[in-house]
Length: 426
Image (cartoon, rainbow, N blue to C red; front, top):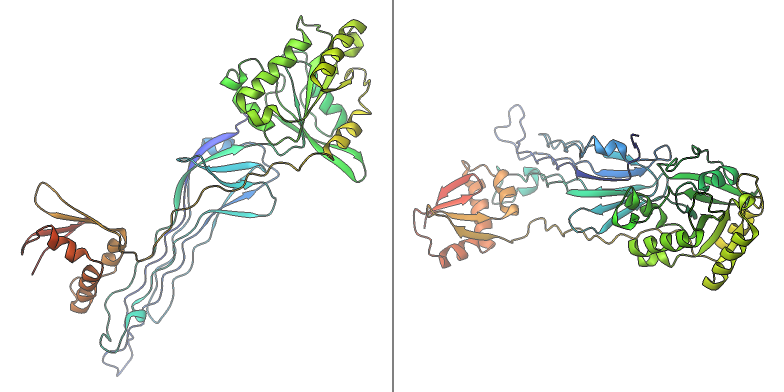
């Protein structure tokens, strides 16, 4: 059987680069040489994540793995700034946790409808040459290129936002219970793994009281180690405030409800120590076909473990009318649904910092690594004397020239900055 539910995906997002500043000079009839009027570049588009209630899976991200926002427009003459790019909106199901793929740290928990979560910011536009005119440099032939947009490899994890999670082995009656007490309509049949996707349902206690319940697909022994679909399903229990642990108290399939109860809790603990401490109510289902001795044996076990027990029959609706009220009252004693706080700290971007690295290659050239210098070089007209002077001043002010001299640079040595090369002149 094909499984179409996807709750984890890895994608790449990149915000747009800022537009380049323009190098331009005012042109007017009878005016021999106007002043600089190069406009600024526009801002690059952000990559924004937005919750969408109509989505319930991350399936789309299995087919499209790269999301790139548009770049800002370049500046133009006549002091005209480039247009900022539109933001790229990426829609995900409510409850999607976004993590930095490299560190695993949380960047955002997309848990609110109609709220924008900016994951990658667009780059600022570069300044046009109008900003560099001074009394001594009235015709600057250089401008600043736009800044690069942020980009990240990220992991999307869908963790259902539900107050209550129904857990238990396959075919113990969870789907029947949630379909009876809530608005959910899961597929129900008498075979294992009928439910292959978590099912959410709103349970209404009265007009002003309700909670969200999730039917978590059957957890089996070894689920915490990824056997079957274990990890995929256990992930959705993490936010639940209360767990309804459903067992087949009749043992009609030859299973022992006490052993099953212990095994499921072992899987929860193996997956997450915190999850194993989540409050539980034991639901003894199929009481209509169980013997009194079977029910009492399980009741004694729950009393010994200090776990509240509720005996029902989903098939005959025995006890189901009272169940929502009992669960609602328990929820009033518990903290709200877990919302994961951002942990990831974006690397600080120093717009015109002076950090650099210099090393020599086998051909004797001095290679300079400095992203800020590449940006300046891209906005420099190397054939223009004033523009070249500005670039040389930055080399001197940043300490690059001093460092080259310490490394023994000589007249005529090759200096390389990415693909650009020039000879060192004393």
